[in-house]
Image (cartoon, rainbow, N blue to C red; front, side):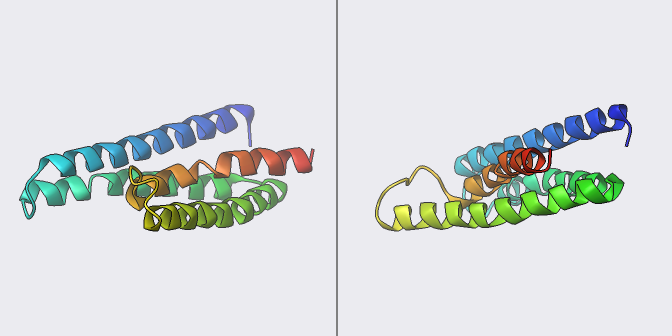
Length: 129
């Protein structure tokens, strides 16, 4: 993969991730403003979906364009980030059951968990350097 393609992929990952996180927070805010059962609530609830699908498509393209060594790094980083995201989600859930961290709901937490992939990716790159 050329250096220009790598930079383009990095920009697409950052942009799609930022759009997804922004859409999640916008959706949550807008849903709090609408009465229950309104048509607008349905549209606001589905607002993050196209951005999430875009982010998924960017990640799939990134992996498909990678060579075997890069695919190994991606797989290892996902193997680290996925369980870390589950641990983070469970921790927040149990903190909420205990009466803490009531400001964060799981809907807002999931997109942020995707950010766990970034340090896992850096770790995997560092490990194989």
